[in-house]
Length: 334
Ligand code: P6P
Image 1 (spheres, rainbow, N blue to C red):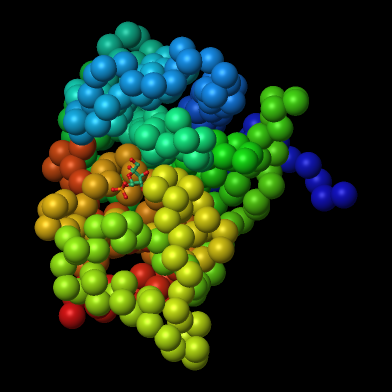
Image 2 (image 1 turned 135 degrees about the horizontal axis):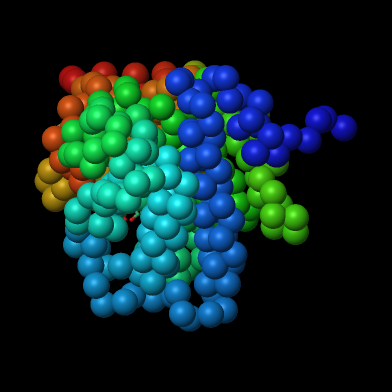
């Protein structure tokens, strides 16, 4: 039987791979692990207990209705991260403003975390997979001082770690710290994440395209041309491709990691910069994609090279098998 490795053992074994970490990044990742376990137990009950289902009558900075689970998950990750004294601040999809930890532990924290606590929350009520996405950066402001905006507006290339937790038929934590991508599956009977998908690599090509074709009428001509290309018959290239769109980015991206393909959320006449957020959705997914041999772009440049000026800014997002993203970029540049 292959050696069974837990996430905790893996983090310790790979300790040396983390840049300048003396255990802080390990402690930070373990706080995310803890929050994921607690959130998993709540999501598992979501269908039974209405205390976290449904809206709470508020909207987040995106103008999206906040579900109880959104708020619950947001508070859970904030508290878990704050408790470890490795983090000096957090940017969350659920928070208009940056969260700066001004206690001693926060002031001396070396990292900032940018997080979407529950992506795809509109899918909670219909029992579709949802998840958490996070990006970790080393602060650029002096240790011992409050975190500042510049700590959160770093290039995606500065990420020291990134990952997601998908709560689906099983709960998985997938992350990278710059040395490949590894997936861990949660066994709730013992409360442990086991290394189930070591060194994840995305196939260079695939035959699945993932886009909300309900927006086709609003797409710009080059986007329409690529979607039409995916649906046209060419047996030599395996087309027409299969269409798969779950409407939960983490679920669509996770499938893309495992089976290959391309996930797309383009700009359109009704979404000038697309829908997804650069800082805490696209950049972490782009980091994972590149680490797994895939690619992520806005149609003109790699996602992680996009200049960030606002922590909630949106970007067109295309990610998946390298050859498919390259092909799409040809259409969009054309
Ligand atoms: P649409 C969920 O709200 C989300 O942010 C992503 O998880 C998902 O891929 C996308 O929006 C779905 O958006 O416009 O296709 O319904």
